[in-house]
Image (cartoon, rainbow, N blue to C red; front, side, top):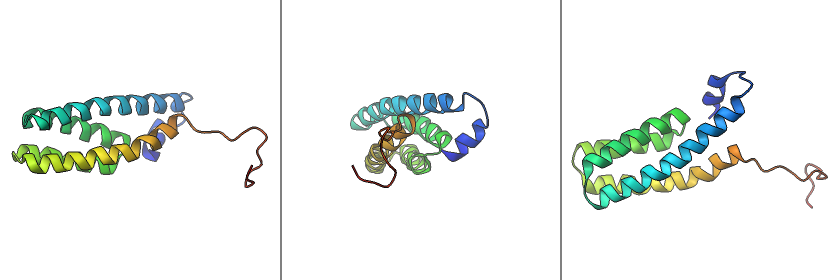
Length: 123
């Protein structure tokens, strides 16, 4: 995420651009995961390969390195016609996205402290 911020530089709209990128990533990844799940359940590895490729690229662009790497493994499993391996990698991808999603959402919807809160003191 830091590399993406650096890439946006001092653009006055950088925060809004980053927010839109994250929102689109979350939305599109959710769709790809549903499509991947369906494709793997139906043993359609060629379709799964396409979704894995798309997920790998978008994850890498956003800086979600582990998600991108797992997607690459899934892609290779599909290329090698290994349904069992593809399903195992998909389970890891789903778990990784489930962990990453709240962190990404926190980037676009930061929780602010109450106005009268004193830092370091419990309420």
